[in-house]
Length: 194
Image (cartoon, rainbow, N blue to C red; front, side, top):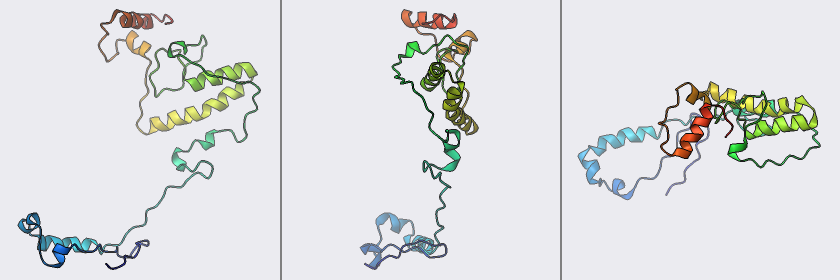
């Protein structure tokens, strides 16, 4: 078996793999014989002589090592936020509604109601209130806004809340037959907290 040279630069031919025993001795597989393997083999041999193009890597972020076009580092604060509050998030899906005028910026995900916030948005709002500093909320939500913006630019769709879809007759699924689930849907349509 002859040693193979690594293909690294453009213009260098690719090392050719060793031929199998059958081909060296002139034998062909039954399928190859019926397809004219002799002429096909000659065409395929020419492919091994083509130069290899070096793979170009996308520029990476020096901070997180992710490709720069999907990196969220520019949206993070340069220095850590000084927060004295300890926040523990224990959240049940039915308890995500806040009585505030804040609406969710996480528009690429369907929320149950118009007043539901993502866990990050709840934490940012809570810390901002507890620390009496609106800058905290703005700073913590900047990466979420960038993420949503990037995904919307690359094919994601804005998702309306289930409440909005039900109220406007746009809900794509059939209404449930289960009375408990049906009651929940009715409460959603009437903006009653579930």
